[in-house]
Structure formats: C-alpha cells, structure tokens
Amino acid sequence: LLLVSGGWNPVAHLFSQAGGTLRYDEDLAALVPGVSRQKVRVAGAARGVFTLEGCLIDGAGERGPVPPGPGGTPYWLVPADDLGGHFVDLQRDVTAADVLRATGAGLRSVEHVKRYTTAGTAHDQGKTSGLLTSAVVAHALGVPVGEVGITSYRAPYTPVSFAALAGRDRGSLHDPVRVTALHEWHAEHGALFENVGQWRRPWYYPRAGESMEAAVLRECRAAREGVAAMDASTLGKIDVIGPDAGEFLDRLYTNLMSSLAVGSIRYGVMCRADGMVFDDGTVIRLAAGHFLVTTTTGNAAAVLDWMEEWLQTEWPSLRVHLTSVTEQWATVALVGPRSREVLASLAPELAVSAADFPFMTWREAEVAGIPARVCRISFSGELAYEINVTSWDGLRLWTAIMSDGRVTPYGTETMHVLRAEKGYPIVGQDTDGTVTPQDLGMSWVVSKKKPDFVGKRSHARADTSRPDRKQLVGLLPDDHGFLLPEGAHLVASAELPEPPVPMLGHVTSSYRSAALGRTFALALLKGGQSRHGERLYAPVGDAMVPVTVTSHVLYDPEGARRDG
Image 1 (tube, one colour):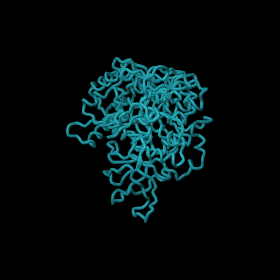
Image 2: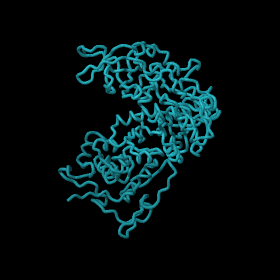
Image 3: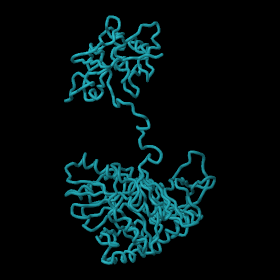
Image 4: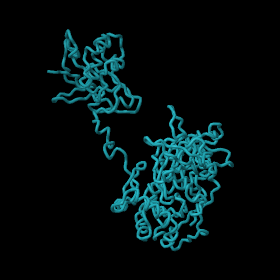
C-alpha cells in the first residue's frame, strides 16, 4: 500500500508564470498566491478557496479543519528508521531519504535540493511533489515551510503526451509537402515526382514501358528540336518594393540592379560576406520602385530571411518592403525552337518576334485568354519563355499549352541535363559553400562599377584569387557511354599512389545527353580553367576511368540558339 498526500493546494502555476510569488498559508497548510509583478487578479480555488464534501475551506475567511498531525499541525513526514520507502515525488522516485541526504550534504535552497534529487522535474513539474519536497526540507532544516518556499513552476501544468509534442512530425507529415497548382495534371499523366525542398516536382514523365533514361532523352530531344514545357512554379519569388529597392538590391547582388530598365530582366548572383556564392536567379523590374526577384527552389526561404536580416539589422534606413509571392504565381517554362510558334498561337495579340520581344525582357499579355506576365528567360539555352499567371489560373494555362499537341511535358531531370549542357550551375549541387562566382567562370556577373556589395571585400583576398582554387569545368569520359557517378573524385594518374592520394576535384553533375550523343559531367577541379584538354582519371570501383577536361559549356557555346 502506497499512501502519499500533499494536502489541497491552489493551482497557482499560471500565477507563478506571470511573475507571482507564493506564500505559505499556515491555516490551509498550502501555498497560495502572494504578490505578482504583473497586474494579475486571482479568484476562486486558485487563491485558496476550496469546496470539499460540503465544507468551505477559505484561507481568507471561513475554513474547515485541516487534518492534524501531532500538536494539531500538518503531518508532512512519518518517522521511520528507513525513509527510503517514503516517496516524495512519485514520478522521479524521489524519497524523503533522498531529500534528507541533500540537506545533509549542506544544501539549504529548495532549488538546489530539486536539482540534487530531481524532485519536481518530471512532466507534472512538481504538481504533486512541490509542497511535499519543501515541507521535508523545512523539517530537516528546522524552519517554517513558508521560509523554504517552493521551486519554480514551468509549463505545462497538465502533462502533455510525447505524441502531442511530436505533433505532425510523424510519417509523411514529418515535413510539409507542397504541391503546385498543376500537380493534379502531372499525377494524372503519369509523372514521377522528386522532392525539391518541400515541393513535389515532376521528375520525368515515362510512357508505357519506357525507362527513366529513355524518357529523359526523349524529353531532352523535344526541348532541343521542337517544343517542351515544364512546371517552374516552385522557383522562389520575392516582391521588393519601395523607393530604395534598387539600392537595396545593388548591395546584395554582385552586379548592378538599380540601372535595370522597367520591362527588363537581369540575371544576378548573391554572395555571403565571405564572397562565396549563396544563391542566383533573375531580377525583373516591374516599375520604378518594384522588382520581382526569383530564387532557387530550395533556397527561397533562406534568401528571404537573408534579405530581411540585412534590411532590418544593417540597413533599416532603406525604404523597402519584402513579400514572398512564390505561391501566388504559377509559372510555365515554354522551351524549344518552336516555342515562339506555340506562344504566338496562344497569345495572338503579343508581338513575339526577336526584335519585338528580345531576350531578358518581359511583356504583359493574355495567354490562352488569361492575363499573364511573359518573360524571355532561358535556363536551357534554347529559345524559351516563362509564362506567369495567378495560381488560380495555372492549371487552365497548362491545359491550354498541352492541348496544342506539339508540346512535350518535361521534368526536373531533363531540366538538369539541359542546363548542364549549357554549363549553367545549380547552387548547392555545383557549388558547396567554397565557390566564388569567378570559380564558376562568371567573372562577368561581378560588377567593377559598384563601390560595394555583400562579399566584395572578400573577393580581394589572396585566397579567393589563387590559381589552384577549385573551378567549374566539363568532363568527357573516353567511353562515351560511361556515366560518371556524381561525387566521384578526380586524380592525376591512372596508378594510385600510396595514401594519402592527392585529390584534384570531384564530379558535381553527370548526365547522358541526347544533344551531345554521349555522357558528360561537370566538376570542381583545382585550377580547372587552365586544365582544359588535360587527361585525368576518376576512380570508380576498381576501375580508373579516363576523362578529358573541357569547358563547362558543352552545347552551343556561342549562344546562337537562345534567340531562335
């Protein structure tokens, strides 16, 4: 038989959380609210008014009897030779013997005793043991209970299950799943999906009996030879609005944005303070004080947080407001040499010739009868358009494009092949936090006119201009059909020396190309920009795979196909 009683105590936890102190009421033998540093009023049982079997017990007025111990006082401790079975905290298995051991060791503060014994640290936070612990400490020290006081209460007062604390972080709910406005169509048409950030993006669209390799090659051919479309809605989109919006973007991007004309678009790179690439995307000028910034899918939240940090902590005088509008816009990339024909049929009022609608500009138009913002942007190197409509109209736009009959849908795997053929890096795949724009062969994106931008000073360090830095290059395996594994290391010799083996770099992207008729890869290679034409080796299993270093731009290096 286990008997434990702590008497009747007000539920004063919320009062304590408000900064209130408790006092010991000798008549009630309970701790009741005392003084609070906040404006708090306590009523009812919380201030010591109890109703028990018809007997009113009120610390401020009429009261019933308190069960007496010897001499008419509360009976907190039953004398015994062995107090090791006299439990004070049922959840922590703390006994009176444990408490007396603590006071015997010289502890006087009930807070110290709590930490010595762990009494009151279980998930009821002293709900059943708080006063008992204080009373036993008072008995051991020979002082009134009120002088000892009580340990600090911490929420929650009512125990919370671990399942409730875990909440949605279980199974498929562990991370939020985000889908675009076009997701239903993709699923109905057999798309296989991959996770990009929190987004479910179409990976590729296999036809009956078609392997992934065959499907991706087919989609690539459609984009290079005809016309194809991709759901690009997941790209991060941030509205930058205010009189100082241009100045703000100038400070964050390596190139100049304030000089961008309304109606024009500019590619930009952001660096961290150490000069390393943080993110890239496009900046679209919609009005004098209104820019739309696009980011990589996985970095959208991080970029917004980065921008807000600089705006709020370093440059609060700038008159700029930032708003994430990623979910507000559905974006369809229309790609390929015949994309202009398809757009012209969907938007008959839009002048789509190269002269009327040049690269890196945008136009407002009705596309398939839907108000749209059409941008001449290409992440494939082909003639391409990015059509933006409200998310509500996204599915209608996509359905209209697909009903043309000439358009092939393509997914993220094909997107990666197309961009890699053109040497367009993916931040986080072809970069690893140690790569500058110059390492990527993009010195042109670093302005020499601007007095400053985040990371500019770091670009002047000797370390960032070392000739042996890892730089982006292309790799062509001798065996045109061999697909290098991503992450494979690169060495100088076909015979590995004794460890440690000097590693020259590693493969960042590797694909099979329909346009090139072979496999190829991108890599970060020490001094790579001066190694074009060199023969290196990639250890793959027990084999040493010979590769030739080349430019990272393997397809249409002149960029002639971009304008159709």
